[in-house]
Picture (cartoon, rainbow, N blue to C red):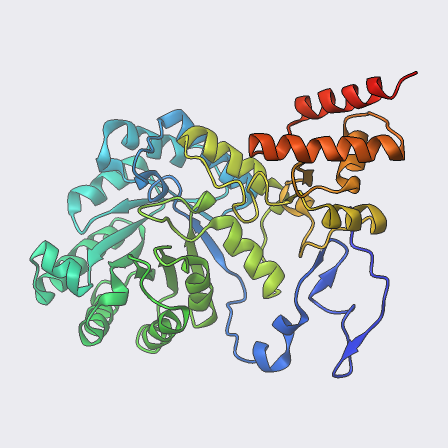
Length: 419
């Protein structure tokens, strides 16, 4: 199904059917591309996607991924085109160690990374796995420092030692400041500058560990750090206030060049920035180049759901089972009349599909659609009777009418109308 533009109209002298906001299979808001709005953007020339599904995603309470499952997910992430895969934390268990090592030896195009604390033993474990690099975490937020009982000087000393050690052994290394959005700004600048000057990391991750920063506040934080260190910046955000995607995008607009994401947005508490939502937002709402195989997103999502046994809301953005499903008759009438959807993008972009639910809010076009889908036929009068029975049944069971129930309704109406 493709969008077919049928009318021509303009706004402030611009043809609204011609621009980055509209294509054969999408149509988003032209206001996104207003020159006054886009003048504020400072996106990198290429955004690096660093996937944390196999580490932070697995930290979702109740999720356990076995080695073979991690390997399968890693292969699918690589197929989709993710540039970096955080394969896990080798010291968590022997099986995790083996999983990280096997993934590192798969010969994938993605760079394979592991996660470590500011501990040399963690780094040695990463080296034994033959990964290309590590994300090295240390507490910087005031609440986290209190929890650890570390002084500012102790954190700096441990960070410089661990990152220096990793770099000496040839690992690509990023410092990951835990709880960075609740850090003392003076201390945060001091530790990052010191690490930069003494340990020479390859990147710094700016971390909203508890998802408590606004996109505007996070953007300012990233800008302030961009002004004091020369290394590339990465953003890692959580979804405690439902803003992980927006906050991550803000970080990319303000000086970061890599974004940490997880498939389906899984992760501790309310999760991480959703991989598929960040990718779609960047490409279609901001017009940024994103070199991923979007048509594989649904496959990737389904694979992660299968192995994590972590169900998604049916209306989860981009990859939800019902996100392109309609019940209201007026919406389906539009599909049938114009052969187009009113959605911002066609589901085929991400490997999803349209669907029709039959229920209390259905109309005659809903019944027509379902009859065609199931290879059934009925005349106009029969369709009206079928619709009435569908509405009655839906109210009775307080659910939608499934295909088997619909076939029974159709059969009863056709039989009743036979001579």
